[in-house]
Image (tube, rainbow, N blue to C red):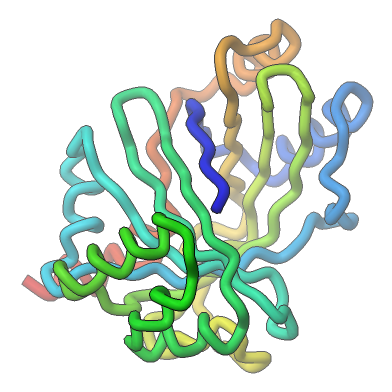
Length: 231
């Protein structure tokens, strides 16, 4: 089980700005080893309660909230990461558990007992929460991510674009997943994740960004229309 506590800043920028910033960052930061010319694919299945509690708390700006997701990177992956993110004031706490592909598939089908096969306390916590609040698979979100890393303060900068989603097929390992665009393809979610203080050259980049900080949720983008009409 992996646990990270950090601050996150999000901005909405243009694809053109993404390429400009990427060119600048590749000179001063380490590229994620999975980066290609357009980054790498991330695919996440989000769970939510019967009442869409996590979605509504995010929309309402509740200070203490969480989201649970299952993440893979390619349909051929032999594993998936079960992750829980919890908002705690200015900080984000993320815990994750690497699951075998077959176990992840059972989790998607609603068989949460597979979590009891893992010794980690986090697995037991997810089992209790997902049963107590009747969590169900709600949406699959896929996008391209380009990432850069700085060793200082565990800083990580990501650019997420080509964001698509579906609420009709929850199979994150499907090679024929049909999805719809949920964010203007000319826009990019620019995110800075860090512990402690930001380095000066990253502060300068945020000032150049010239945009107000936003609270952009890819999960909420995937569900904003259908969830508002479900009440």
